[in-house]
Length: 139
Image (cartoon, rainbow, N blue to C red; front, side, top):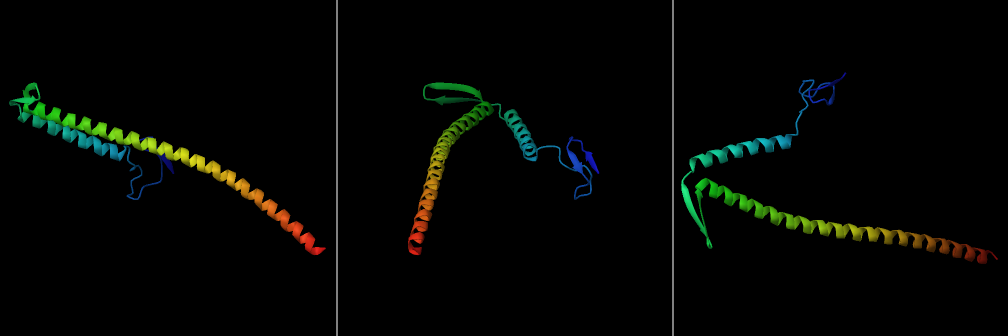
């Protein structure tokens, strides 16, 4: 018996746990990341509410004043942006290397095809030469 579950996916029969429509309707890893993100957001809100004291931050010739939570969150965001930029640099380098290797592989495949044709030509020449030598031996 084929039926459609709440997700609209076709389910046939029942699952190992005995429920006819127990197939999950969500992408499990994304759901876990959503839950973790919501928990982290709640923690940030609690942190910001508990750290409202005004602090002064001096960097080179600049001076900033703001709540402790805001300054720390901005520092974390700046660190995340820097980390993301370093990741992108590495990702682009790897992408260029992969493209170079693919191009080199394509060239090697083409060379292999040429060599296969050359080997087949040499095999046919060798077969013709062997046939000629066999004819000479028979005479």
